[in-house]
Structure formats: C-alpha cells, structure tokens
Amino acid sequence: MSVVVPYYERPDQLGRLLAALDLQTVPGDRTEVVIADDGSRQAPPIGTHSFTTTYVRQDDEGFRAAAARNLGARHTSGDVVVFLDQDCVPEPAYLETVLAAVSPWSLTVGRRRHADLGGWDGPRVQSWLTGAGPTPNGLTEPQWLLDGYARTADLTEPDDRSYQLVISAVTSLGRQLLHHLGGFDETFRAYGGEDWELAHRAYVAGADLRHLPEAVVWHDGPDVAGRAVDLVRLKNGETLALARLVPDRDLRGEHLVWSQPDVVVRLRSLGAPAATLIASTESLLAGSDAHVWVDSKEVVSLLDDPRVHVGEPGAAVLARARYAVECEPVLLAGTTLRRLCGSAPVEVEGFRMRATRDINRAHRGIPSPAPRTLPDGATVARLTREPTLERLWQSRPPC
Image (cartoon, rainbow, N blue to C red):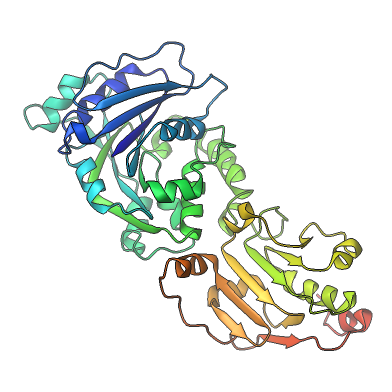
C-alpha cells in the first residue's frame, strides 16, 4: 500500500508522523511512503525507516495541497493509496484497518481525533502509542462529523451531502477509483474544499463509501472552528471555490447560474420545430439548476441562454452532475426538475430522470432502484404539435 503525505516546512510534524508509521502493524516491506513537498525552502530530514520513502517536490506557487497530493500519488505503486496530512499521527492499526476495508472502487475515511501535540517529538509519540508513556491532552471532536456519520450509517447509506463528511487528512482510495477520478482538482489553491470536491465526484461516480471509526488518526490541534482564524472569511472562500464545481444548494443558493449544473438534460428533438423545442427547454429549466443539451443547432442559435447547448455534455460536467434526464419534447408542469430530484428515479412516457450515481453503479452491475411515477400534481405532457409560444406563455398565471 502507498501513503502520500503533502508537506510544507514543518519537519517536527513530519517527524511525528513518520515515527507513528514506524509502529504500523502492516509490515514495512508492504508499505511505501511518498512525501510530496509543496515548495519548502529546504528538504525535511526523513531518516531511515522500515518502509520505503520517496521525496518529491513542486515549486512554491502558493498553497497547492491538491497538486501536492496528486504529485505524490503519481509516484506510488500500491493498490491502495492512503492520504495523511503532515500534522497527523495514525494509531498503530490504522493502515491495517484501511487495507482490510478498501476495494478497487472504494473511498474510506478514518476517524480524525484531536490532541495538543505541540513540543512532542517522534520518540515521545512512539512512547505514547505503545502505552509506555503519557498521553497528550485530547481536544473536542467536531460534533457535526459525528452526527453526519451517524446519519449515514458510517457512509454506507450516503446521501447527496455526504461529500461534506470526507476529510482529506484521513482519506484512502482504491487505485482504480483514484485513476478514474483523476485525483484532486488542482484549481483549489487555498485552504479547504479539495477533499469535498473529490468526494462529490466519487459519490457521483458510484464509489463505495465508508467511514472507519476504528481507524484513528490524531490531528495536532483543534478542528478549524477552534483555530485562531477569520472563520467567516475562510468558510466563504471555501464555499465559493466549491460552488462552481459542486452543484449543491448549500453551496450556491438557488437563483444563480453556474457552468456546472446539478441536472443534465438530454433533449432529443425528433425533428420537432424550433418553437416546440424552445417551449420544452423553457419548462425544463424553470426554477432549477439544470442545463439542456439538444441536437438542434437552430435552437441554440435562437436562444441567448448559457444553459442551452448543442450536442452532448462533456465528461467533466457528467462527472459532477448529480441527476440526468433523457426526454423527448415535453412540457413539465406542476413541479420543477429541482423538486423532482427528491423523487428520482422517475419515468413516464417521453421522460426519464435518474441519479447519476445510480447510472454509474449500474455500469458496475449494481442494481438500480425501480423507477417511480410522477409525484401528485406534476405532469409531463408530450409536445406533439408546435405551440404558439406567446399563447402558451400567456396562459400561465402571473408570478
């Protein structure tokens, strides 16, 4: 198995981590550790260990933890890739627990606990972990994480917001899944967010998620909420960085237009006139975080709407959109695609809506939920005749 450690100018923290890795119950000859330096002025002392160590470095271009993790991962060879931050100390059974749980298509999250490790060195850490010396002062675990793992049965029953329960400091992936995802998004160049974005894509891809409460890592210092930082500005920066990529209402609100939609709609024209397709498109986009791809250049040329495209959605869009619709020219009424997401999968004549996660898991042979009919009050009417657009839109009640 492979351990990737993003590093920057804290040799004391790295020394504690390497000392803890020396105590792992997984034999050293089965472990490789790659230290990925994010541009430190000096290389850290690494020392000699039972496991193989590799040191790689990227230039200092600001905070680039996502890129450093990818750099480290590219220099690994194990079937399981374990990401550990430099300010962490894993308990001796951590790697063994992860190794037993990770499959080629899975993402696991360990339990990140907190302690004050200021002034501790490697030998003192080893004395603590072996029970021969004192323990550090423990700090409070974030209750929101504990509540989230309880809500999702330790991520075995994930929901659309389970990505928020994935912490990069204790995340491990099967190599097949990591290769499929392409690693972390390197456009993240400030603290926070890259782990949630990766987890969101893993969820959409149909990965098997699992929290391992028995796989414990001790983090030096409190959770971010307990640190002396401008928490409001920090969280807003993280939210805005995530909003462009993760189509969650928690991150982006309801009334802005983003290039990454939550719902991808493939509208088959079936030779219908432009007015029919425009009427259908308008009803599908109303009140929803959706984009439409239609096989009609004429429709796209007539509309000045960045949510309407010709052809097929790209791979990057499909990797992040949580829902997919395939339909003929229809009029959606009495509901919106945003509301229908809660009822998916939904299928009626000429219209089909599914969770992207279910689609991707079906490709791996995992059965999908049975389709449902539309909820009460919602209608999908096939547009078999060209409507008079003005009359159609006049017939609706005013807002």
